[in-house]
Length: 225
Image 1 (cartoon, rainbow, N blue to C red):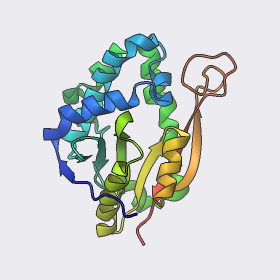
Image 2: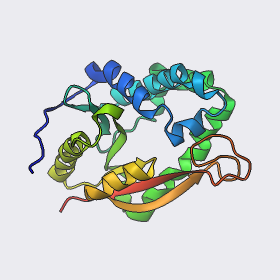
Image 3: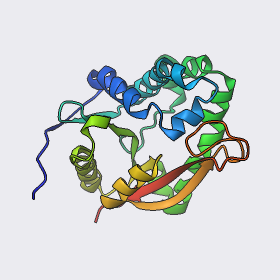
């Protein structure tokens, strides 16, 4: 059976609000964000996550990030073009990133800035120096729970791969669950390595757990052929 041809669209800051809403719903309970926000009770995390994602995605918009959606925002992604970074220091304050981080507490700030930065060290394992400077980066991607397993993510991944194929540069992302890792693998991504966050203090779901195995993030890359 052929895959349904879902309509996809791509814009900039015009999609910021809706994308933030979808991503908040999608990543509420995600192990990475549970770990990041573990200073807050699970039932109090939604508004905090919304504020944090608003700041992060505003930074993406200010740095020319591409906001993609499939089938009426059933699935969304934010794609950073080569040479563009959301952590550009000139836009972090206007975007509210600094303020957003400090509203979630110092523990979360430390985890976001220092601990999670280890995932970025994976670049050197798979990308040459030029590619490390200029590659396509999927900053975030998610599908609403009721819209999964219908090909929406595949439709957006296909569009992002076409952009990468157009200039011959690699496409990089991080998977935060085994399910998303396997999805990306199905669409041609290769696992470069994995980073374990909160080992010894956090369980696999992101909650505090003494002696826990931590939360795993998989760095993955796709290369145009």
